[in-house]
Length: 62
Image 1 (spheres, one colour):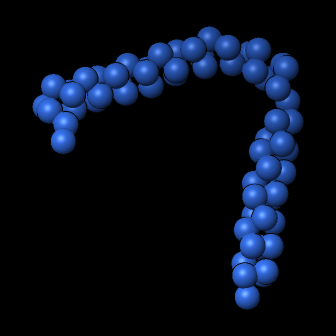
Image 2 (cartoon, rainbow, N blue to C red; image 1 turned 90 degrees about the vertical axis):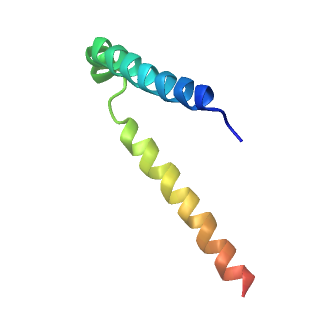
């Protein structure tokens, strides 16, 4: 399905992408702490909403 070269390229791309993301995040960590306080609350609310949709789906499927 995929050639050896494609697998090597995918692995190198993934490693490079992760390294660049780590450096970018470390560079901007002070900005994130200043401007994005409380964003975890939005994440929790989103996950609760998805869980609620799942519960409603299971409840009405019966």
